[in-house]
Length: 209
Length: 209
Image 1 (tube, helix red, strand yellow):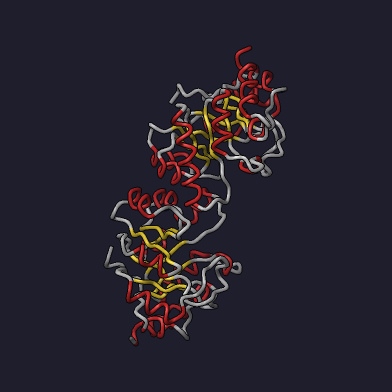
Image 2 (spheres, one colour):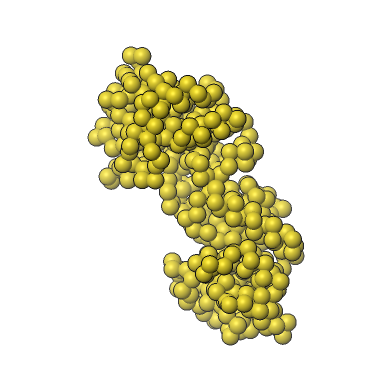
């Protein structure tokens, strides 16, 4: 799974829908240049989560983009998603790998350097460095890494690092210059009036590197 | 799994702990005569859920009593639980069966006769008839079956039926006389000052039939 294109990593958040359809936003974002999609749901009943994930998988498969499920391995297995993304309070990594095997992507969030060093002993597919900046999208985040912290993290990690938390068009280039292999964005695309255009603008930054 | 003893089915609820340990209550309840345990958690992070389930599995295996996980197939698979219990908003039954295979118990809640008839087309291991009476333990329940409804349900179902919702020592005998093969109890044991004694008292009713 080392060839997965992590460069523009969309994390969903239905709080930004404002009556629009999640499928529609995701499809537009992919058309604009998103390379991987993570479905993140909190407090959604399992049955509804399965249906939502299935409907997104139709979109991501149509565009040959991987779909990652946040936390819930049962949902990922049920619909045949491409992988899962685990936080530190989610399923322990070893159990997740045992359940999913090596033909699935497993990403892991780290919130500090200690967790990052521990992750160097694991064969995860990528790390989420979280949060790089303070963000309003997620409430329970750890202190921000900042650009210096991110640079340090990318240097010390044996894994490819995706930066998440407060990433937008303005700071995208600095983030990449720190060594991050991917920009994980939530509101900068989900909350955009034109998600396709927003994704295209991120791609411009990615091309300029 | 048709030989699983469903007669005294404990469903956990940590709101009744009052500082006591869940493991301790469950072990006492099993010593008192509980024959099957369902771990029901809501809003517990996956990692914590796994740890809790593992620790309960130690107890249930020690006493050769099956441990069933409510809703979360990932947790059940991760710890090697004996099965899952699905509500109508949980993982669709067919997917759950595909994931778990036939060496796991799968129970399904039905909240009305239409769902009960649909379940006759499925090879579930048992049905939960929910709720038999109005209950304060669960807030989002459908209208109660009542004793007449339960009798009808047990007659029409091809599966063994476990009654849940408002079951206590006073109504246990009537419930069994309606044809239920199991008494599923939450507060009547979890909230009891002496869970072992509470379970023993249910066993007396079960013996008297």
